[in-house]
Length: 174
Ligand code: IMP
Ligand code: MG
View 1 (cartoon, helix red, strand yellow):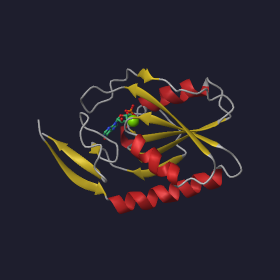
View 2 (cartoon, rainbow, N blue to C red; view 1 turned 30 degrees about the vertical axis):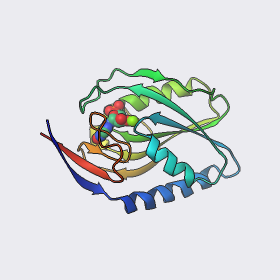
View 3 (cartoon, rainbow, N blue to C red; view 1 turned 60 degrees about the horizontal axis):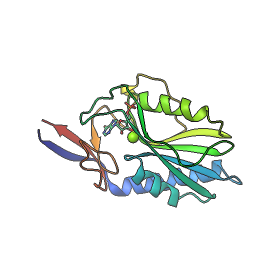
View 4 (cartoon, rainbow, N blue to C red; view 1 turned 30 degrees about the horizontal axis):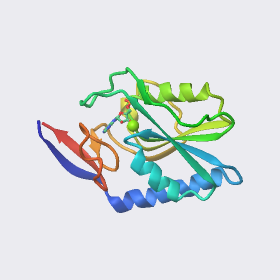
């Protein structure tokens, strides 16, 4: 199998948008503290850049789930590989995702986090592919809405490759 990657969203465009999102989130949580939760590994580049643009006090935690094998389709089976280190009860939680595709991962995660009684729970994603949605999810902040193609870079992988690309690219898989 081989892949050809072409640029979809360049580095400057992403930086500018992440800055805007950080400003909007800072306004939304003015006077409050914010607990960011990153879904590893794809969300990590976005969360770090976003956190640098947020001006209210921020804490962070990480969790890892698996829904994909090495392919490009969500299996629908979501397994927690690494749970949060800290309880979230009473905290303003913002779940930070790389991409929402079928929504299966997110609807599972949001329900699970809600059951832990945070003060508030919202969702922020860098990318959204609404055409692919199977499960309904309410998204509070979206970086870019993109068409239905498989993308890599800025944290997103294809079989663990391309996470380190500084841009979002479309991977044509042959
Ligand atoms: P969902 O459960 O189908 O919404 O899938 C969510 C997860 O699948 C994301 O957090 C990504 O890790 C992965 N994913 C979905 N679409 C893509 C893509 O285009 N490129 C890379 N990973 C993707
Ligand atoms: Mg992800």
